[in-house]
Length: 145
Image (cartoon, rainbow, N blue to C red; front, side, top):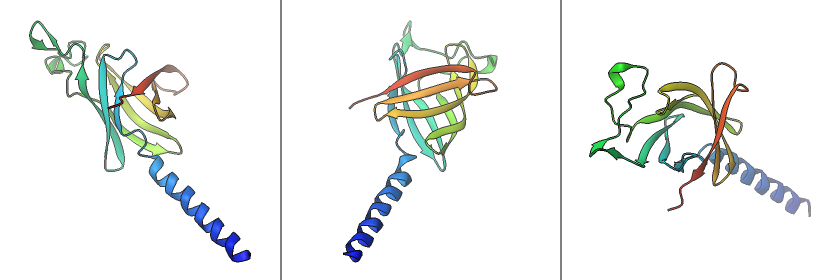
């Protein structure tokens, strides 16, 4: 009887450890932005996570790619938004991906950011300047393929 209890305890411990080890990758994949005008693919690069725009609606204007016209840096205003890295430097820490930056092509500004998975299909994206409790939080939706 004691052996069965011990074996069960070991098995449950391994399951919970395995779940924690995989949890940092749960944000990987493709997400719609709040307005559903863009899809962002989140991937990892070493221990950090980043996100690139892989789909945009509209992707072109007057037959030309939509450009990063609002960028604060004049030299970057002619780059296409499609393919742009908008999330970078995120590291997983206890259920939150933080320490990164998010670029908003609509305003041309870069903010500190944190991501938190609310469910397998919902991702909370918080952008802020300075303190994380002062900022804007939006929800992204997983793209189902």
